[in-house]
Image 1 (cartoon, one colour):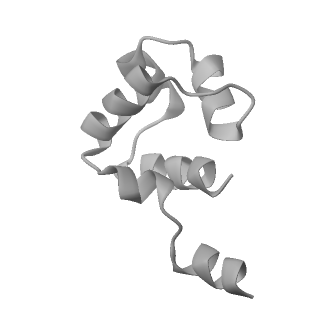
Image 2: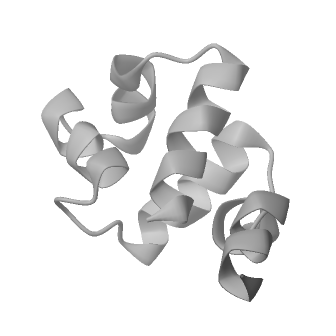
Length: 74
């Protein structure tokens, strides 16, 4: 779930709307919203596009951040 929250945070930090990202991925806005909320799984092809759009690496999406690491160790 942390990865999904991070995806939304990255999108907002970059100043993109859900509609902009959805258009880039060639999906509807509601489908993209489902990606962010975890209702729908994101395909590998869409992850590659997101990485390109946001100019990020896998670790920014999938590896735990410091808060998550602390929670896991507690």
